[in-house]
Image (cartoon, rainbow, N blue to C red; front, side, top):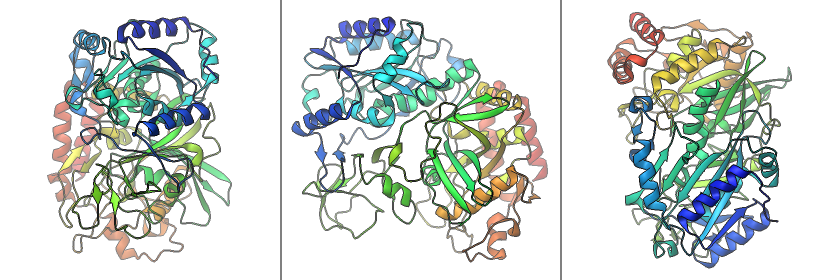
Amino acid sequence: MPLSITHKPLLAWVEKIRQLTNPKDVYWADGSQEEADRLFAEMIANGSCIKLTKRENCYYFRSDPADTARVEARTYICSDKQDDAGPLNVWKSPQSIRELTNQTFKNAFEGRTLYVCVSSMGPIGSSLSKICVQITDSPYVIVNARVLTRMGQRVADLLNSSDEIPIMRLLHATTNDPVVAKKHWPCHPEQFFCAHFTNATPDDNHVVSFGSGYGGNALLGKKCVSLRMASIQARNEGWLAEHMLIMGVTNQAEKETTYLTCALPSACGKTNLAMTQSSLPNITITTMGDDIAWLKECNGRLYAINAENGFFGVVPGTSSRNNPTGVKIIEKNTIFTNVGIYPDGSDIWYEGCDGPVPQQLIDWRGKVWTPDCGRTAAHPNSRFTSPLTNCPILDPNWDNIQGVPISGIMYGGRRSNDIPVVYQAFNTQDGVFAGLTCCSETTAAQEGQTGQLRNDPFAMKPFLAYHIGDYVQHLLTTLNKLKHKPLIFHVNWFRRDPDTHKFLWPGFSDNTRILAWICGRIHNKVGATESVIGLVPRYNDIDWTGLDFTEEQWQKLMTVDPVSMRNSTLLNQESLFLAIGKKLPAEMIYLKLLLSARL
């Protein structure tokens, strides 16, 4: 059924872009199953998509080999003042990108369809949710957006209720070349740009992306809206947009659910943690989402919603051992991109999955693959797109327009030494300091080698659209206003034995034991002792039911080496603070001096 839109500013913007891009027709996507079936059928017919026969309602795509990831160097923040973009971003003047947009998109859709996708980021009707409108030339974007966002007439009806309701405008094209448009994966990697107008006037497009069909570059509701543009709106409106999972931890004996968020950089186990299956009989874990949290004060507490409606996760390594929840999620209703596929198109395969290694596949580049060919069958950044409702441990409040009350915040990184598996910050300011100074080792490819530390403040380095110093102050102000402040913790699942170089902590489902201690601290039901970096659990503070883990192992896991921390962590913090410059709140400098003195 065609989408019914009466919102005058939206209609005017679509008409403006229609005149600029000159398409043969305009299609308003309604997000229905019938629409998805038709678009998939069209893409199967043109050779860009394969329907898998062994997975219910699942489809396979293969991208251009040059279009497989976000391109940070050409992801721009277009603020009026360059200093407002801060040291973590690439700045371009708004005028230069407006001119580039007009040149690039002139007649870009000639002879092709202009798709309009109207969606809600966040539960429909929530005070935190935002309505987005993406114009695109890509049906792949539409079928993915249908999973990751909330689409349909309910969103249109909300928008139609008042012309005053603001919209986030998102303009995207994979190509402006009719020849390239006929390829199975149109793109122009050499011409790619993705620009965010953070001081946009009503006549500007809030986000413009050209030249890529890949996830974060093309699914603009993802990182572009949910983090970069939302971070600006959150600062202006007094809330928080964070690169965080949201999970519930329920003590079955007390029928008490504690909601936590966690920010972890890439390759630090955020999706696995969000989907943890409990290893303790008295603890149940549920998830609200694995990537985005929008948080706002209500009655003195911090409440969170998941801006998304689905998962957009990395596929390789997903197995029954490390993420049985993820294995269940991708059994049906899933879009796979850049994994390996069996020659008969029946099913997908990727490194680290369950079962035997097949003797022959077609790899993500479209080439014949065998176990001894020297290549991976799946791209390391290959993806699955699945609805939240696929998740067997989905929290019952996942679509609650009020969100859920957050009692604890976790930050973390991948550290092979120095940092224990968990510690609690001394106070709110110290917790913000822990988030600001998050860093991870850039590589752990070889046993026994410690990679270089890479700063990733709050796991937001690629996604914060304004100055990091202003962000720290906004976070401090927001948290300090709360009557019921969440406790803040730091986690590190990747500590290694200095002698054997093996991981000291079993991780995965056994992370439940750390989550249980965190909840015990929140409710003042479990102890801790003071260390130089924060409050840490003693051996007997952890529930060891079902796990043979000695006190000697625990002490090795929790040891803090002051000499190593001075030589690595403190120096890393110094370089970060110098980069932030004069906008860094004084509290952070003071806390760094205190940490240095304690060490």
